Length: 108
Image 1 (cartoon, rainbow, N blue to C red):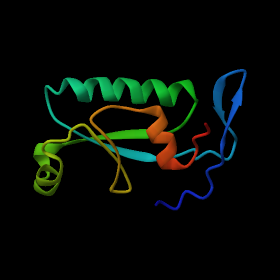
Image 2 (cartoon, helix red, strand yellow):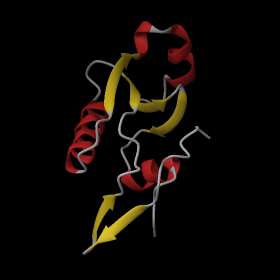
Image 3 (cartoon, rainbow, N blue to C red):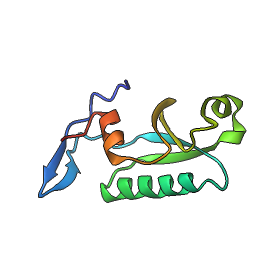
């Protein structure tokens, strides 16, 4: 697991999930993608909506799977793939719940 101990729990206010001020303010994710990938397009859209709706300063760097032989061999059947510090976070479809669980900020 990542050294994200500074992440605090999400707080639910009137049914809307909010992050406390201790939520990570700057994370750099990588999205392994390729041209003409419709799942990748939808993944980027949902990730962007998630980040902007919560006012987070997270960035998403796209990495073409064809540009890296190791990434291609590892993820050729799994794009889109979301990585944080080189570690797998999500693949195939964006999921707010799975992302929050991975970061340790999901509340049931």
